Structure formats: structure tokens, C-alpha cells
Image (cartoon, rainbow, N blue to C red; front, top):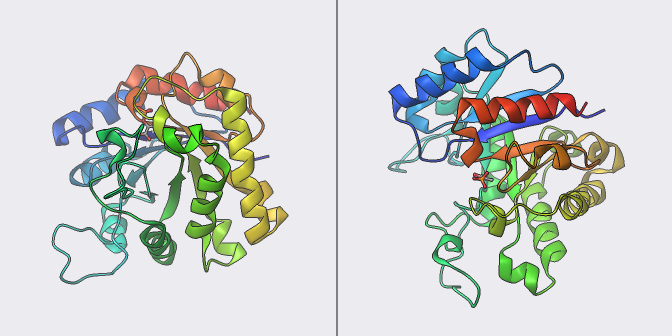
Length: 269
Ligand code: PEP
């Protein structure tokens, strides 16, 4: 039995006061999450604040990115050890908003599909290795663009991203990951992927993990779905056998809706 996870991605929202209010709101309204794990990925500036706010609650805290070196001339970047020093225990890696698509604006793509930060399969792998080295728990993201789905390339794109993120990792290291399948066209659009199709692609993720790290690791690995998850659609997603939780943007920014998602994850066990 895989323990479900409900993870909130606050993106670039919440200054320290707002972060404290939101975190306290979640703590105050959330019943015991039972068998579900709850993580909030908060802006780097709010890590310490939120870690303090959720102390003594079941909520865990993560950063939204890390750099693959320990220190040095990387102005503006944040190392894994810096994240650990805040008390956060998780890190999000390779979110589609950070993956690079530079110079490739093609038909069907919008501005939203052209990432600003240039993460590639190679840097996502380097960041994943570093996260594991410093003891952070990574949620690593994959997902296809609308144009790739329309071209029938979903499995190829997602499979390729998963193979690349796992490159060079031992089965024991792969077992420490959580993978989030997030179709890019479903993120922040209100257009959720059909639950059965999301389940199918999460199954593709699991089968690639099985090829790389063996069936036992694949069976135990948690695969989340992300993309316009809301209290209205979460039950159908959580009912799918290959979906072990959600990575949620918009609906994680209000305590009430996030707590409803946590309850749905807990009820799915
Ligand atoms: C996300 O930020 O990873 C995400 C899935 O956002 P939203 O839930 O708003 O689609």
C-alpha cells in the first residue's frame, strides 16, 4: 500500500505574512490527515517562516527548486544544504514552469509553455542527485505539452523525461523519489486531465521506473497527478490505482480548498 501525498505548490505567491497566515490556516482547519502525507512547497523567502508555523503539525515543508552545486559563484541560486538548514525536508524539481523550451516556440504553444529558467533533462537529473545527497525528499516533475499530446507523443515525452531524471541513480535512490505527472496544458488552466487518462500516463511512468529500477521499486514509488486539481475533481483522480496523490497549485492557495484535497487523499486509503 502506497501512502498518498497531497502537495501544495504555492509558486511565487505569499510574502512572509501571507505565508504565515496560509500555513496557520491549514494547520487550524486540517483534521488529522490519517494515512496521507501533506507537503507545502513555499517560496524560498518563506521557508523558515512556514517551517516554524507548521511545527508540531503533520504538515511538511519543501522548496520549489535547488541548485546542483553546494556553494560558489551562482548568484541568486539556493543550494540543497541551504534548504536543509531552514528545516524544510522536501524539494520540487523540474516543474514545467522551470523547464526550458527556449527557441522552440511552435504551433500550439503559448507564452506559458516557454519556460524562463531553462531546466533541462540534464539539470533536472543533477538537481535530483543533489537533493538525495543532502537528504531532501524530491518530487520530480514530468509532463507533455499540448502540441506533444496532439502529435501522439505523450508516452514518448513523459517516458524520456522519467528515464533522464533517473539516470545514474541506484534502485535504492530511485525508491526515495516521488514523481509527479503534470501535463503542461492542464497546469493553471482549469482543464484537468481525464482521470483514466491521467492514470494511464502515471502507469507509463511506473513502467519506466520498473525498467530502470526494477518492479519492486516501481510498485512502491508514489506517482502524483498535477494539473488543475480541485475539490470537485480530486475524488475521481484519487480513485485511480496508479495515482498516489496530487501536486496542486491554485487550489493550494486557500486553506479551505487545500484541506479538502488533503481529506480526499486520506479518504482514498
Ligand atoms: C502546479 O503548480 O504544479 C499545478 C498543477 O498548478 P494548478 O493546480 O494550478 O494547475
